[in-house]
Amino acid sequence: MSQSAYISLVQGSAVDQISLDGVKEQLQHYISQTSLTGRQLGWEYADAAFPYAIEQKPEAAGQWFYLKGKNPLYRHIVFGTGTREENDAVVPYIHVVLPEGSTHGDKAKANELCKWIGKRLQAEVKLFNGRVMYYNPRK
Image (cartoon, rainbow, N blue to C red; front, side, top):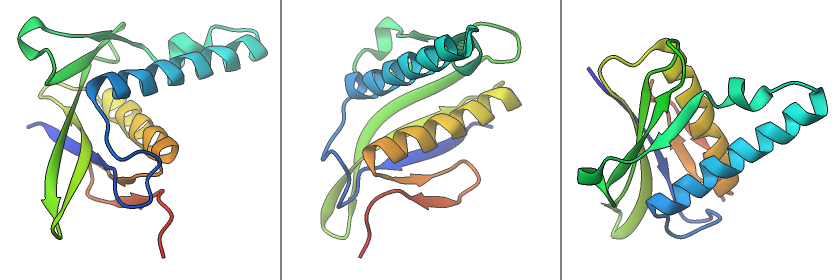
């Protein structure tokens, strides 16, 4: 059974909306940041920190994309975007899905990516286990 996590752009978030290209930009920033860390440490940390390739299926253009694992410990993570109505307001979100057949490594990496993107966007993150993390400034 697949599992889902949500990164919601609530009031006080760094951006008001996000597209799939925006999510890919966040992932590219993560890749470049980890490669810089690896360069400082003197080893290829980027391959260990992001063991995926970003891929897009033609039938899913504009709806979702997925990360395909580069080794047997990682298989795939799916990313999509959408909006929902909440208290008479439209809340954009990033939907992260672990499809059937995902590994524990996929879940751990997806949790890490959700937290990292949520912190960068100052968003509200609902993890796969149902826990909610608030990175947005709240009053």
